[in-house]
Length: 247
Ligand code: PEP
Image (cartoon, rainbow, N blue to C red; front, side):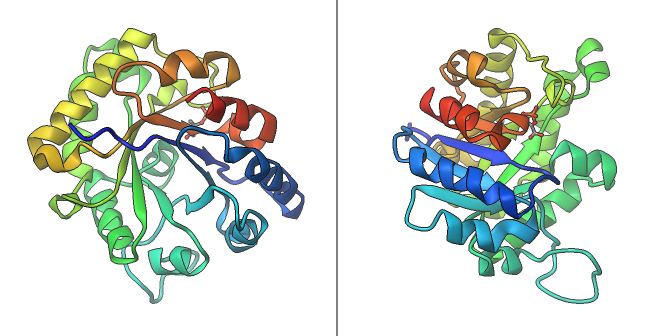
């Protein structure tokens, strides 16, 4: 099996004004020491300037969402081509905050994945169960169903990541046990294998949900964990670099 290329990606969500570029510069100064790839996904307003601020470093940039269409009358939306034009290499798709707050379905996420591929972006496709779904014993079936529904066949042979983000762990300080993470990541890997065969082996499966310096090493060394999608802790350069150093 081809080993996945690990990635530590920071999701800044709707945070960051011009002053935040100083944190990005600090991340850029330290990112070269990480054993995998390091990315920052800032709000779209900062994407181009952040790319310029980290130019010449190991830091990649990414968007947080894109519209399925390349252009048109879609007020407030951003096309994958626009993200690429602003220097992005990656794009987060299907984040639970978009699935919940913008009624995004697996089918819509799959269309956005196609848009990302069209624009030459590497999609980071997010999946994850609610607390109620886990308590009802449905976590595995919910998440593997999201993987099947959100990843179109066209991803075969392309660079992509899956991010397992239990919704109850996002921004809450709660994290699953290592064995819960490993069980889910193994199930996602098996689903990718069943769908794409060995072509999906290089795709890292990231964990996301309250990753911080104190728990990063244990999470990142768990079986089938190929990196992390980091929210809150990615806003502070020192914390984010400490997480990246734990790879
Ligand atoms: C996220 O929203 O992608 C995330 C993982 O957030 P946090 O690290 O803050 O839980």
